[in-house]
Image (cartoon, rainbow, N blue to C red):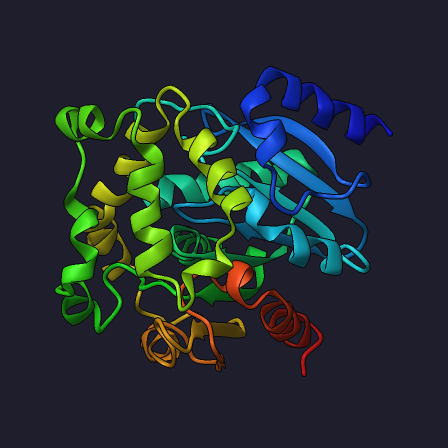
Length: 303
């Protein structure tokens, strides 16, 4: 009941989100604002058992994980943050490199009294999840990465040449002025071009995230997530030896990264399981949630 009341308070504070909410986190999840690594992170926490942290990417917030979080909370403690600058987390001026955001995640877990966790990431969250696993190897039980490259990890130099990734270098004050008031148009480009079936990204989902990304400072932070990637590549090159030794699940959408996700991770880890989700593009939790949840669940169960 307390968590439900807290969530209702947040909806009152951001009224435009209330009528555009996709899948909601159930009431057993508690909402917290956690001081972490010099910023404040909005976090959903629920369940009991071994810990799992779910890290979202661009075009989403932690809300994307509702179905997976509900499934895992049956036998895990599930931690779902909004990355710094995104969703309902604070929007500091800097700190958008992935090693800093990995430190944010570490600080969140420590604030919750959690020592070790399974780390799951999608999109930008995959980059943060890798940075976390590479820097906190003894704290990472297993790693799940979904449908995104990892800066600096081969074949990064070939992947980053894709013309679809022009947004990696897009940003700055003029770009912010260009997008201001047009956040929905900018976001539609990602939902439409990177989906296997754009209709799977519902109107309610689009309205919900467009409202969140229209908050003051949100697009500046979103651009900073991408513009830090070249530096992230240099940071990650220093972590490739030795390779990660924890079990890694690499999930790609059939119509997006596909098997390339596992190709990337085999250059960074020794124990990689490959899963390609059929009939899915980049937006795995929106396009094929049941298959994605099943893949993660089986990996956590060692199957």
